[in-house]
Image (cartoon, rainbow, N blue to C red; front, side):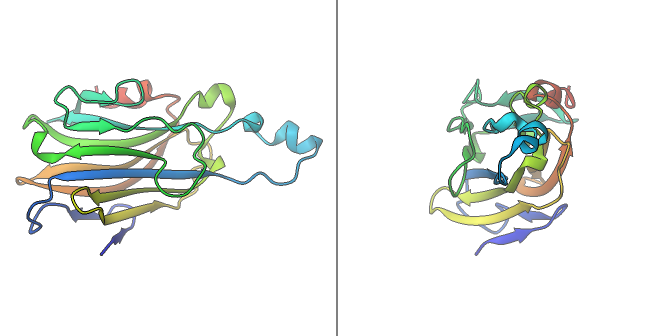
Length: 199
């Protein structure tokens, strides 16, 4: 049974749940439906009518929250093969997960203590786009072995003027894995700047 989380809440993923070692982390979003056209809408509607290309990524952190490696559309697998990104979705259209990341908890090196799941808008500054143009954003954790959803966090805050989101974290605590719902918006223009927070 799915646990619906609110911002700041945490949930155990492996404690008392024998055999959960393979996760699917699904992230989804939809573009806000454009209202009726017209000249003013075209001039001031933002986004230039272009699709909004959101990119999900994983920042793998060592102790002290220092970046070890990033998995994103340009590098779909971690070097240890514990984190695998299934690929880029350019528009966010359609139901369900827009991008998925597979995580093998038992393959994550002991030096890695946290996986931070982030979403940023590709070329947000150049395209004049922000998360105020996105709706129905969520992150969910699924047991890959039986496809059962363990928990879900709907990002319902107003993220206008934010160009990136720190959606959630899977982290080690006393030998077990937990998930934390973060939901923090930032104005980082790209993954590079977002990742530099952890350098």
